[in-house]
Image (cartoon, rainbow, N blue to C red; front, side):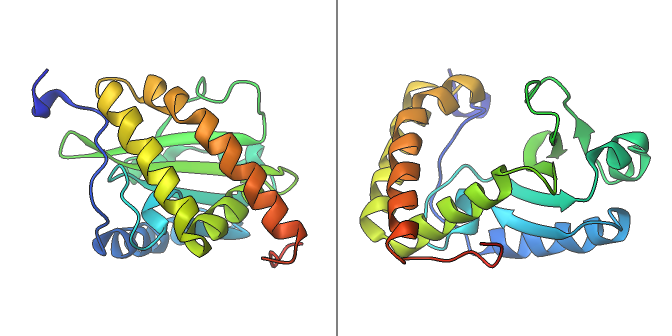
Length: 184
């Protein structure tokens, strides 16, 4: 496999990731008018952390059905709905956006009753606050990318155990007073 064929590559942190999120957020605010929040999540949202150069965006809306009822505005922005990615979670819509033939963004739309956005915020906060946790997470991501450069699904599965362990640590951190979400 050549580097050109890779679909998974973990690269050094790029400060432009924050700017890319802000640009996407500006566009999304104009089409997801009922959004309660639009946030940068995932590894690209954590300064200094190596990541796949794909911006993960989390949107919380009052009702996911309203988003599904009219996908045209998101499609005009280049987002493609992938209904089979999270088939067991009817409060999680997933979209991808490619730029110049490369994956650029993942858009996760959640209903307000979903517990997932709070979990994503906690994970982001914990990794950003704990340098050792960030180091372990980055190492797990790099190992997974080296083993599975041709499959996002296998890459995700390969780092799943590390993520479960880190999420358990994040919950302990939260319960010990390390962090309080604005929604807690």
